[in-house]
Structure formats: structure tokens, C-alpha cells
Length: 211
Image (cartoon, rainbow, N blue to C red; front, top):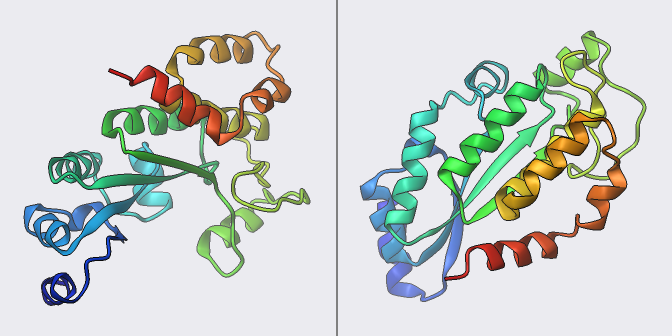
């Protein structure tokens, strides 16, 4: 990597972005990437819950390591992107809340939360299949409903927390209202659909962070 960064900065003046694990990020790495022209660093967080992240997803990353990685990325003036998943096997409301809280703490420049998909050929697919959690619902991408019916969290809750995540990141003043609607059982998906387009969240974020 050091050899690449040195050669790239001599040959090109084209900004680039790349992915990295949080436990590879340190001052030496970031210094090399910054000097080479790296403008964005994308990092997998996956879940705010240690058990889901490390035992179920086998990420093997401590929460403190993730927090420190994003702190260092900010220190070097590189834009960060946090990848997360919701609806993984054994997800609960409590673990979904932990994912939201961890992302609020690291405060990445770009936030991403996708819905877990059990791809055939993976261990988690076999786990979901064995437990009878895979429904016949059809989806077109990982920003739509969960196809799992697992006892620890309902599909409606996965949908709710998937949308609530973006409110928490870009329009936090609306979060108590959405939680109240969900709690008293008058929450309806159409309420989120009205404000769901991503441009809305970017717009609200710009208003709430304007100096």
C-alpha cells in the first residue's frame, strides 16, 4: 500500500475512494492515503451490537476500534462512509437501537443502512433456511423489506428501524414523533413514504447543521 500511494501521487492527481476495515486504520495508513489523494474511506460497521457483529456476522471488531477509526479519519480530513445492516439473524429492537446509537457517536459523513439478505451459499443462509425464517416475499434490493420471518424481530420492526435510522442521522428532531407513532400502534408505512426520499434527509441535515 505504501508503494502504491507513493507511485499514485507521482503519476496521478485524481482523487479516489477505497474501503478499509476499522482495525487497519491508523495514523500511518491515513497519512499515506491522504498524501496519495484519497478523499473518501468506506468502513463496515455492520451492527452496533457486539454479539451480532462479532459472533453472528464474524466481523471481529470491537466497538472502541470502530469509534477510534472514524475519529482518526476525521482528523485527516478524509470523508467517511459507514456501512451497516439491519435484520440480521437474531436482530432485536434493542440491537437495532444500538446500531443507531453507535452511528450517532461515530457520525460518519455518509451513512448507509441496508436490510440483511441471506445469500445462498453462505453460512447465514443455511442458518435461516434451517430455522425456517426465509419467507416467499419478493424484493428487488437491500433497501426494501426483510424477507426473514424470525421470532426475535418482526418485519414491520425491521422496516421501522431501517427508516428511523435515517431520521436519527439527518432529521433527529422528528425521531421522538416517529417513535411515539410506532409505540401507540398508529404508525403506518405511508408516513415514512412521504418523507422517505434521500434528498429529504440531505436537505434536513443541511438545515440542522448550518452554522
